[in-house]
Image (cartoon, rainbow, N blue to C red; front, side, top):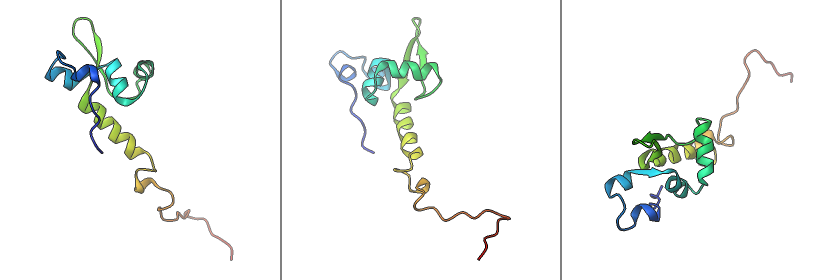
Length: 103
């Protein structure tokens, strides 16, 4: 999967340098994922979505860029359209044990 470009606010001159590239705030993470910040807040409240944590005295919610990329890969593998192992059309027929068919 090609790497997603970093949000413009993280790569702009005067950004936080290496820290700005390794960690994204909610707004930048949402932009990176193509979601709204509200969606990330709701997912965090429900303990869903990509892993996040609080950073600093102000307790800002942050996302590791590498964790976002790993979460995206997990979503791709969980989708049967991207994972041939989960595709029901390629699965072998299942037979119930103890169930006989009449001929």
